[in-house]
Length: 179
Length: 201
Image (cartoon, rainbow over all chains, first blue to last red; front, side):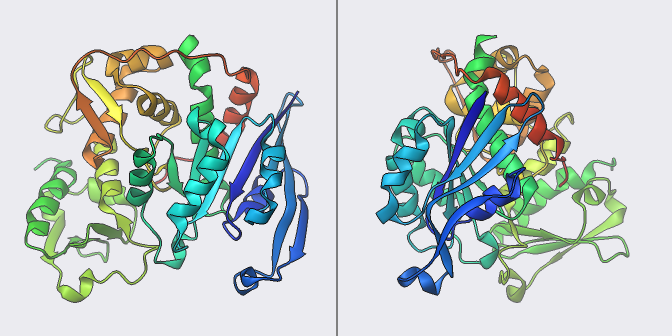
């Protein structure tokens, strides 16, 4: 059996890094040199997808797909999200437009957002000047969402594991509730 | 004073000292172990919080901090005060004197605890998921999730202390849950990821 989790978020939020940290295989990336304003923030960016795998004991594969962050590649978002268990949205909390970015991804993955199959990780907190968790929860409540928001370091396996455990708990809820 | 005094005292200290608009420092014994709290609502500890929790009254001193200390220069090391409240309440949930819950009390989680940065257990993910989705009694939550009532109590006490939880009246909300279709793989992945996650604070 094979399953899929999608990682979404703006360029530079840490999607590629997160998949590299979590994956049991070498990550396949479609990185290209940045050629626009983004070049000031990072040298390369994902143009199609990142791909990694978590291999479970019973030969199950959980595929990890990272979407390209730039809006002009958003046609890939639906393709990658098709059949996914849910979406991990990574937001660079230091970006001035962080809340607006979050709104973009919640809307783009509305099917998942509305049924609670989305978890939000705030990255780059260590750089300072980041929006706090309260601002994100206020934003979510205003839009009628009850989703987990947590600070994570995309380079840290433990942080990502905790984020994914919260995500899985949301997905498991129907299973647990029927027992 | 019992060994639990400093834990309980921190709540009082925060309330009392921050009302004055200045921060304070708790210094443990002759050591250099400190717990700083700023008037902006952040804290910084120099070592493991458990050393503070086991201190007697004679083991610590409290100083007011000047204006300079209130400046938070490195956001990555200062943590929001709600995480300190969570940790104290999570560790001391069994201690009489802290706000407690009846089995029938209805609760609703307004926001998730920031789990990557605080002490927590594996069952707390499931409790948070359920209580963020529906208003429920403490007792019903434990029964639905098939976990110990004490674990739900601990979560609720810590969440309430941190300001994440609402208590309400009325009946538990009835929510229709469908099958996820991913039952076994979710449990398998949950087990795999749980192995690498400790409870450290």
